[in-house]
Structure formats: C-alpha cells, structure tokens
Length: 155
Ligand SMILES: [Zn+2]
Picture: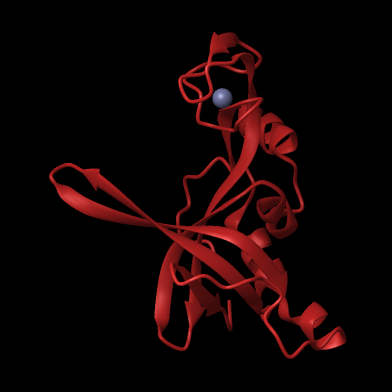
C-alpha cells in the first residue's frame, strides 16, 4: 500500500537513460550520467510499502510497473500534479487491496549523511493471479544471489 502521501508519482528524467534531471519539463540539458544533450521528460516513480510474511518494506517502483499500479502514465501524473489534483492514496490503495504480487527487488546501498542507507527498487513484478493462470514450477525470473524475492500479501 501507499503510505508516503506527498508523492508526485513521477520525476524529471533524462530521455535517454532515465537518470534524474535537475531540469524542468522539456528543458534541454546535458545529462551528467550519460552525457547526452537531452530533454527532461517525466518518468513514473512511486514509493510503495509492501508486506510479506517477514514484515513490511519500503520500495520504489519505476516505469511500466508503477503504471500498472496507478493506471496512469508519468505525463498524466504530471498533468494532474500541475493542476493541483494529484492522485489520491485511497483510490490507489483500494485498487491494490487484496492483490498479491511476486516482486524481484534490488537492494541499493548509498552512503548518505555519514551512514549507510538502503534502498529497495522493484525490478520486476507479476500479479499472483497471472501466476496461477500460468503455473510454472520455476520462478519467472532468473535469480541471482544479490536479489531478494519478496511476495506481498494483504495490501
Ligand atoms: Zn542520461
């Protein structure tokens, strides 16, 4: 479920590599990450709190997976936000209610403010329903040791 209320559901990103941009919409700039001279475009991003048998975890969801959860593209989210009508938590939480997902999550380490901060990013996700329709004895993604697999219940 969504517990962080003041989110925009998008960020300004490099058109080429999706690194965060310190530029306004459609502004041309040189991306620090990929060095491309590019435009700043909105890209989907959301904070989500997921729950499995071991407890809750705050994760970030980007791109098409965020769209699957909000049913909105980043451009639409930006338009609503600029109009002062951001997406409503209750609406999204209601649509997530009772749904269960299998998620592939990457743990990111960042040294910030003299301490190690951990961030969890959803790389891939699949609603459980579709797994049941297509039962497979193996995980749909190749697992590597640095990846955690978390399934969520009871949003
Ligand atoms: Zn870039």
